[in-house]
Amino acid sequence: MADTRRDAPQSATAEREIIISRIISAPRKLVFEAFTAVRHLSQWWGPEGFTTTTRAFEFRVGAAWDFVMHGPDGTDYQEWISWTEIAPPERIALLHGESRGDPNTFESIITFTPDGAATRIEMRTVFPTKEQRDEAVKKYHAIEGGQQTLANLDAYVTEIVGKAVEI
Image (cartoon, rainbow, N blue to C red; front, side, top):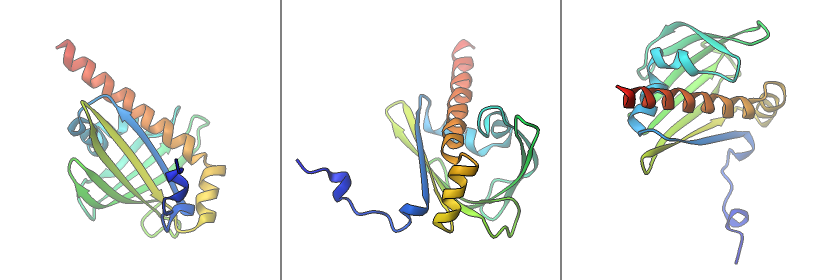
């Protein structure tokens, strides 16, 4: 039997990508809402030990989320996301950088796919260059940080589902 992974065509952007996914035991509509409503985002966004302060947020194509991530060591990271596509509850595309016009801005596509009663979320991030992708992985631990961020989303949504059952 052939290894289809080896035979499958590579994406033209594969060397510039990071793909992180997770199955979350909650309905897609709820997972999408937790990812798109600022009242939820500020509760779970970021890797372990980080907190988020939102300066401005509007969820519509062309609008932005301007925020600061506060690292556990006290370092503040200026962040800016502009929404480029919104297809509830299936897909979001965005540009992410330190500020509007940041030359190191990268693109992300987040998909929400039903998986029985659960939701499979996938974050596909494409950097402008392989070098920027490699720097994000090595210097900023982007893969581990992305995995931790989705784990935080999972824990947050699971807590919401649990509270709804208790009511």
